[in-house]
Amino acid sequence: MEEYLTPDFILAVISAAFNLTGIGVYNYLVLKKKKKPNATMWAMWAGIATASGISYFLMNDDVLKAAPLLVGIVGCNATFLFFLVRGKFNKPTPIEQGIIAIGLISITAGLALHDATYTNILLQFATLLSFLPIFKYTWERPDREHCLPWLIWSMAFGLQIIVVWIRWEGHWTDIVAPINVTALDFIVLLLALRRR
Image (cartoon, rainbow, N blue to C red; front, side):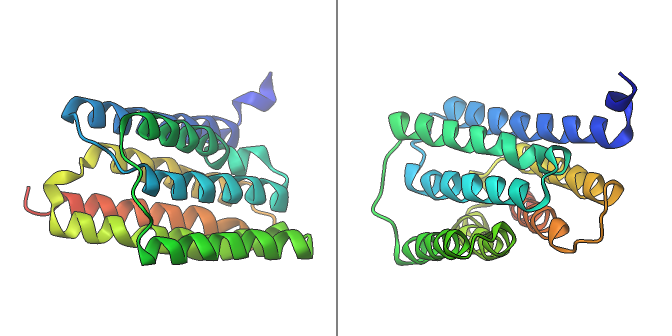
């Protein structure tokens, strides 16, 4: 029982719970606004989240470090399916096609090399690029994105950084994904807070 009362365990559970809460809040707000979400964007994020979460866990073999990314696999895929039924599926834009290509190249290269670390690091670039459309969209219309889910996600992945730090084993690659996702979520939060 004592191994479950450690700070890293407690923070990992809170981090994972925050990630799922952010997804729940986001979906609730979409329903409440009666918006037609773009399933194409969420298909891209679901694919990247799945590959990134699995490769992150495989590269460090630590479920506590990977907890928010692993629950993110479930949350992003559930959100994609929800939006697919409820929303619209647009043809991917050229930028989205490039992001999908980079994601597929990352996965293919990682599988060919049998290297989860290489895959995960490449996927962080795909993750960064996948946020460019929402940065542009939120910059142009900050009122279209609600701040709360992005705040919750920033906190979730900020806690993941702390968990990685507590469980540090000297691998700089363990910290790249949590820093990347925390920063990207926080940028959307800041963009959504403009002109409020």
